[in-house]
Length: 173
Image 1 (tube, rainbow, N blue to C red):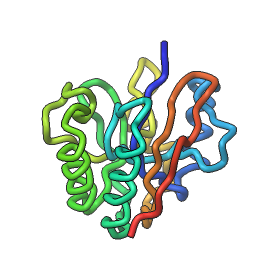
Image 2: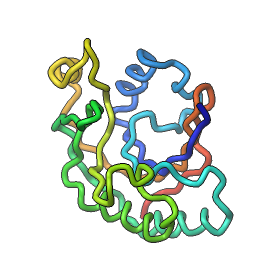
Image 3: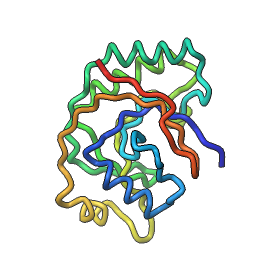
Image 4: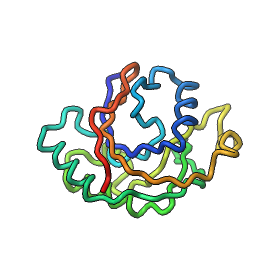
């Protein structure tokens, strides 16, 4: 499988836990890049794997015009496809950032348009299987959640087995 780019907001407070869980499933997606946000909320992905300098400037301008986002990460939920995630509350600033990115880059709809225009902001923590469900993940996260976080960086991250890294990063605000 080839890689893909994602515009993501790293969540350092959950980085250690998500990085360890990623290593449990697929060590190829564990990055050596210390800035890389294994724990993140996707703002827009997939995204252009080779954005132009003008696109990078526009992303920087959008990041600069976005104040840092305060969220509480406490509630676990599961999408129909089995992805177990933490729901950020509130999520209006995250939805707004995604909407502004989509307006600026209409050729890159969230998740390739698979889930429509209204995408639920989330932080992926697990995937349902014969051995994993919402209850087992909640048990693993006992004592970790809730987390109050300030999301203050937007990353253009490259996700590829053996080569996950931050291509560019901008401060919010």
